Image (cartoon, rainbow, N blue to C red):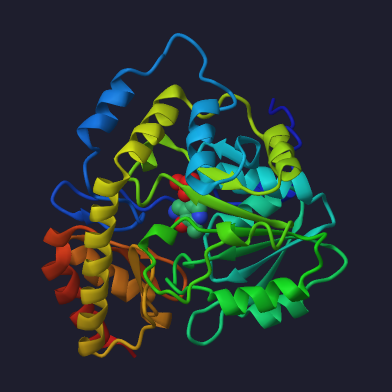
Length: 354
Ligand code: PMP
């Protein structure tokens, strides 16, 4: 006899789990997760090797918070460390939004946002990107209701690579009620060289409802260790700390992050190399006929529309795994050995677009 199924939440059952970029075949390039292709620095490996395993990690990540507080001239209480910025996003959304409340974000943006909002039981409100793949901040400000609790702003935006400018952001913040939490997701900020781009940390004193989210996954190359941080008002960090699953930032992650701060110059040389490669790929793509805005992260966005499946198949045939996302493909930048295959693929795709 079949026993009745456990009663689960219908919204969770209807949800697909987070979809990771496909693992690449041994001879293929995995350019689907915006990872940093560089191996860890020896000092980072040494820090990991010295990590404690039989004891629990420091739940408050005190040393790492101290280092970040020093770096950004804020208090340690204004920093909160999580197991990746995706964990921080979940904590802040859970801390601010209940069932019936709205969480707003631009779409298309980071594919984890919709699921995190659903898990919190809140309602996603999406505002379409502009035709040139940017956040439409005036439309977002106009879409605020008395149910809006959180607004996610992603700059550079994953997957389109567009930045929000400081000017746009300040005009936006002037329109958003200060009772609404604005999460500025800066996962890729270290790759930005455009001086007009918003940088959230200097704005924290002006906008007390602003929280900046950053990660060691991208520029610092620690994606596998899961460590990110938030900066903002102490009571907001306390709320996220309360909503967090305790002890999820392991000692290896805390130590590797601290070692990475010690060797930031070397790591940022790598970031500069990746950014240079990105800019030269963007130029080459434009010469191939792609009409794409300037990318600011460690990835390129090819708006392939109805031909997205075809595009992903062409890349795959040429040994490149990309992320197909509805109306475009996103290709990570950093593997200089992949450049020829990438450009051969993109030339074939642009030639075959409908
Ligand atoms: N925000 C954005 C925009 C991202 O693209 C990602 C990773 N793909 C994250 C947050 C989460 O990164 P992590 O959890 O590794 O810090």
